[in-house]
Amino acid sequence: MAEIPVEMTTLEKPRIHHFRSDERLYYRFHFDHWEDGGVAAEAFRLPDMSVNRSLLGPPEWTILTEDDEYVLWGVTAFRVEDIPVGVEMPHRGVIIFTFRPEHVPLRKNYPHSEIWVFREEDHICRKNKNLNLLDPEFHLRWRERLSQLADVIIQPTEEE
Amino acid sequence: MSEVAAIVTTPYPMEGFEGEYLDKTKFYSRFRQIGNLLKEKREKCHIQGSATLSSLMPDRNTYLLSTPRENTIELFTFPHRSEQTPPPTPPEPTKERPTLYLDAFYGVLVTFALAALKMQLAGEPTRAIDISQFALHRKRKKASEGWILHRRGRINQAILHRMQAADVAPEWTRWFKKIHAALLLEDGWNGDDAPPPEVIAAVNATKFLNAMHQESYPPTRIAASAMGGIAVTRKVGNKKVLVEFYNDGKVYFLFSDRGSGSMDVKLLLLDQDSLTRFVASMRDFLNG
Image (cartoon, rainbow over all chains, first blue to last red; front, side, top):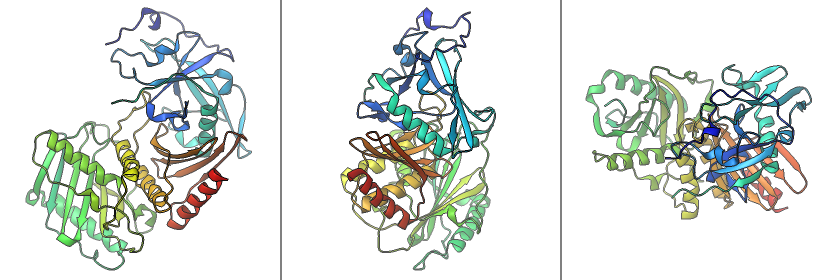
């Protein structure tokens, strides 16, 4: 059983809303999604993809849990500007998607954040029951692009 | 025991299931009749085996497998622990929705084989399921097996399967097993909120894999997709073809070339001709 360092816990720490464009975001992935030294597009998920902020912790925290569930997983990193933020991404010439990272601290993972996606003004998420707004053609392109931009920081290990 | 997989054999014959070509309307109608009979006469069924399977299936599913040669059908039930909060039930298929009838099915079979294995591990009585006989045959169109998926008392999916003896080489078996293994994932398997692949995604992925098999053109990777479904990839150098089979039954493919930065994403149709053409276009793209 791993021990969560005090620095990783949220306690009374505030949410930090601002993300620098060169800040790195860490994302954990399974060995099955390791592809030629990189991470496969199908490892990524929209909406509300969970990541950890490099500003608030090292990449190792991304796979650190008390039950060691992700100890064999890998960690990939990409920059905030790779999402990208504040850029309107037209799809089929008419539909506009935008992205933004949101700091969503968890009790035992302060750096935890999510990548939010919007179609026009609508935040696409399970809670809003509007996942149908996320066009597969669009998210497949986006995930492939992210997989090309992301670097593997920690290599995953195959489970026996 | 509240969480069990029950394998039940019933004596109800599958009429309308023996022709050269399967009459899908009769098939569906007969399965409904049998489903009702099973509900009414459950006590007359002969339970062959059971095991705890809470981690195996993501939902309360009941599968009816016809075995016309033996004039019986088998009933498989996979109750789920979260019955208090049932997910929305997909609409019941009707005659106007023939697309729900799929003519190839492999994934669930191995799921059941795994169920049988779990039964053995649990030390409970079981019956063998010979999966070696489940392989597609190119020439004969006759569907010789059919599956009905029940969810919470409603028939919502019918799957026809062509069962003929054919050998699948070990290097291909591993890919089929990858698809079946994906069916065992649970909600949040990616450490976030990724849904597990559904049967429909496995069925479609199997259909595509069969097309690749027929063309002796194997994938380089098969894995669950964090979007909910199964991803089949073939990568050659900087070029990659990724096909994602989603849990809503939709299938999209991506042609990607890192060298030029080009990307092409489109919907993939799953009829045999489209698949054959698609595998040929994959070959052209990746080897070109």
